[in-house]
Image 1 (cartoon, rainbow, N blue to C red):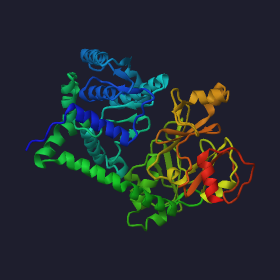
Image 2: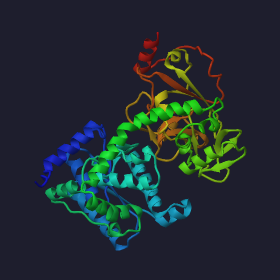
Image 3: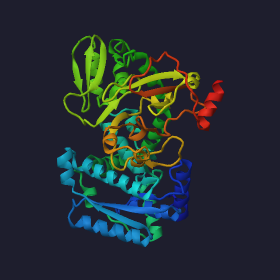
Length: 477
């Protein structure tokens, strides 16, 4: 029996349930919708407007395909007009971006695209940037990362939410999307470059996936079930890596590689410990094999790892990398590019802590999650975060303005980020991310500048706390 086609109401209802179940969007703020003019983005804009969200359609014109680029822009504008949605378009010089950054065409377009989306979202007070990825995109991403040798984090990397970016159609198939567009009487354009096998994703879409379906009917759905199964086991895996990381991280922050060599999967454990510094699985294996050597150096794009008598010491790369963005770990004191003392404590100690603008406290599970990528960088135009005690995002520039920070202060202040989300404007304001809750078992204290040793207990005058922190204090009394 052939599968029943989903009706317009089915598609709208399923999208509503998906958004609400994952809390992807709220009704009280606008949404920037990336509108290329293709089927996925047209369906996304149409269904979000049908659900009552205030949308602003954003179209990027990269001028890479001559008249076809102009055609796409005009079609996107017409779709926005027919749906009575505000339309914004930005022209980009991709070649200039590639020349200044050294990025590929794809990466340059991505950098320009999401940078502008973030600026546009800031300017209108948008709650999120919505993109039209769907089920098949998720399967393609799985294969892309599989061929790159990714671990469980890479194989489950396309999520419903990634920072400010949401994917409300990740539940839907391409067929369902096209049927919905037809039911609404809408049209879409087809990018001629999609037929080219010049890009890896296109080769997977045009050649590999059809072959898989031919050889193994239902392969696409099976792949998505695999992704779901991997997501279900990811937390268990991360907990095991967290325990191994604690076991092999020495008091000075270095890694005991000589001891790791005795583990059955020592190279895999080491890779999870150092991958956020840009090191590869092959490098991790080489480091474990070389654990008896001293002075061996291994470099990633932004870090340098040196073996010293069976210990691995990781620091800033001397051979390049972004000088304005540093990969850091919260399992050891941070000494470059700025001194931040790091201390892990049981939650019972929290009541005795001194709290000031130079110190933040993070839930230990959040701070020490081995799948998280922590970095220190400076402020960029359009940066936003949700300040502690608030429920809505705020421009970091406004946070600077509130403390009357001058241009020199803004340029020199470090921002601590987790997976690109701003967690702390160091020395000025903490975000709401990673805050302690009554369920917190331990916390990590970060203090800008030199702090007393971790074993010391601090006392001080009480300050006003919000309800969450008061609950923690009451529980420990």
